[in-house]
Length: 286
Length: 175
Image (tube, rainbow over all chains, first blue to last red; front, side, top):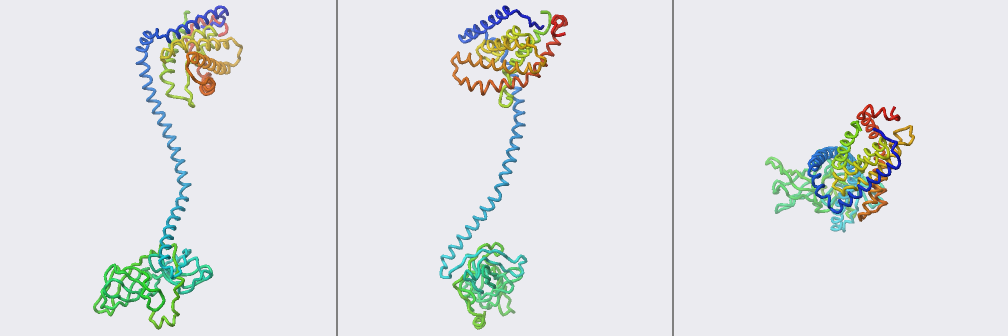
């Protein structure tokens, strides 16, 4: 029951007794004289405490798991946000890496053909329909480019410049249906001459190869230099199929270009090579 | 004493000591471990006054010492004094019991930690007393004060139920 009216004297005595008792206990405990009693109490209390500790520890673990799950979700969301923020940067770096690799390859090619005075250019536009097979590059007459100049990459011929403005040029790809290139197949004991035509499907076909010539799949096809429209020995592609019929006058070969025209980003214009005028080319047959 | 409140309180204290030494450390609140024995001693001090606060503080502290395998008498000494000081608030005129409970719980906890810290330093335990006050005592005292209304009201209710009718009639303050 409540008893709030304890006399001060009694309170002081009671308090003093309790404090003395506590101090004595502390002293005895520190001296180790209570060890038998402590051991006896522990013998009784330890199993209860162990049971409590184990069960609540398990409960705490379960509760902690919920908290940890929530923390992991928050962390996951934060990481997703970070990934989303970094995606544009990753795309930029990948683009830069590809560009760097391409430019390095072009540089090596340009150094090997320094006599051509190659002008590096970036593809800034292309025919979306693929019907005309033209691309637009970011170099023009202000960079010394002229109509008829050859456009190449380190993998081979790309096409020819068909229109020049001051700061851009239009390039007709060799896969264009209106493109014809004098070529030669390097493979057999003899060099087989013919003309490589583009097609509306974007493929290359070499026609007018004499029946007497021996062609094999994987033979290399390069420019012949005949007609003066293109430098000699520029790589065009390789033979993937030979069509020969006894009743035909000529053989035909399907050519696979090494250049992936759908992935063109950087090209080089052979500025030093000046094609012959059209009249002279007609004389030479191109 | 012919009421059942004291045995009930003793059982409560044993359970509280067990909970404090084996359970609550698994569930720190805001990084602070709650000390339920402080709460129990606080409401007992508020119920029984300084003398009862000292007595129950001694009992509670001793139980904590026993179950925590500490030096016996250490918590007993600190809680005896803290409970006695807390008991003086019981006779103070306070129209609002909740505020009284909160304030008492806070300073009983602070007194307890100051005494424990001083005793440990006396026994040559080396630590920064200021850091202990700032990082341990103050958060624990705030937590003690936070739970005080709930524990004190529940404890008062328990004591009202377990006290005999005679005991309640003999106390004019309870009418």
